[in-house]
Image 1 (cartoon, helix red, strand yellow):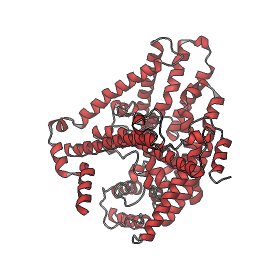
Image 2 (cartoon, chains in turn orange, blue):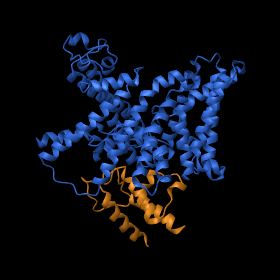
Image 3 (cartoon, rainbow over the protein chains, first blue to last red):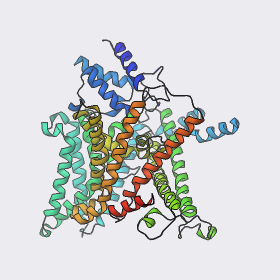
Image 4 (cartoon, each protein chain N blue to C red):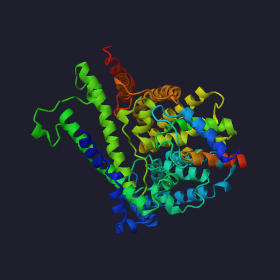
Length: 85
Length: 458
């Protein structure tokens, strides 16, 4: 899968966990998801679960930096790191 | 009306004013204060804070000469440097330490505490040094922890020791909780250009103004609501203060009050705590922002939170972050992965109960190092109830929030506004009630429980 395809899948997932009062339409890769109010900080847990299930990422092996889950771009970087290694 | 609200917005949101930010970005001082210079100032600030800590250590009852606190400070700086080397060369550490670096750090702390307990008085100066290092560690241990996390994430390799010293003895202040976390977070939010720095300075100025406003609010609440006898406003107000008794006085039976006043006192106590933490947090983050680190606020409108978990997230952000990074996430990613609810439950209890209690055990540094168990137990046992209730509240709230996520919001009507108000009131009530077990003082759990029942006329 290309980065663009991963991105589409990710946006689809983020829409399923978006805050009720803030719909995700267009989101920039460097835009902070929490600061811009698109998701709340606890949605990071669901992002972790999503990455574990969809990409078999084992966060238990490394210290998780919640900051790495803050933008679409940084989440895609994690996916790329795992899928190419 | 809209003109008034526009004017209010332009004043209150002055930090977002593009023209003002542009003007400030062109000022010599802002251009001169490059990230490297700002970090240098913070480095010298860290040294000054370290020297101030040295003077504090000199006051410890076990100290007789300057040599002991000096050796203790040297040990603490030396330990910081060793941990920096460990973080920068993380992959070369023994596998056991690499897997559990925080456990290794805390094991070292407890080893020091044990040494302080068992060292005989004949050990003289060395015993005193161990005691001083051990009582200083609770302030530093989470900061050291952030340094190791940075190493674990592979982000410490290109950093210098100075980059870490600035948050180990932070010029911007704080408590045992590292305000602004560690090097990773600070780098993330650091202004790299004059334009970004100008915005950070404006945002910091706004927080410092807000801090002063909240300090003023505390002062007024004390004088007008609680009628503090020593308030400078007392001669002016005479008997016109409301005279609501503080909750502690009602709880220990020093004063009695009708039930509605007791409830009012309970809510006011929670509001006063929130205003107090907002005032202090805004000051710390305000100063940090003046140095170009545009960090999240410590407190962000918690009294408008519509859920328990939302309040917890907004009330004392950096304490919550500490619990999340050191307890919640490590538990969440390691245990019960196939059982989602149990997974969240375990992570929430690891953070809000275990981590919260542990953090407060360390806060009782002098009592702990002196091995005064009875005093430690008396001080902390009500907090066990507080932490259990907090963890349960957060867990239930998280599950409820998760169910709601992803659904489209309904249009705002009178009914939705009313529902929101009811939810806010529910959050206030929850945190006011659990605060009964967090109130400082030697009141026992049963005294506090009796007070809780009395709120319902029982």
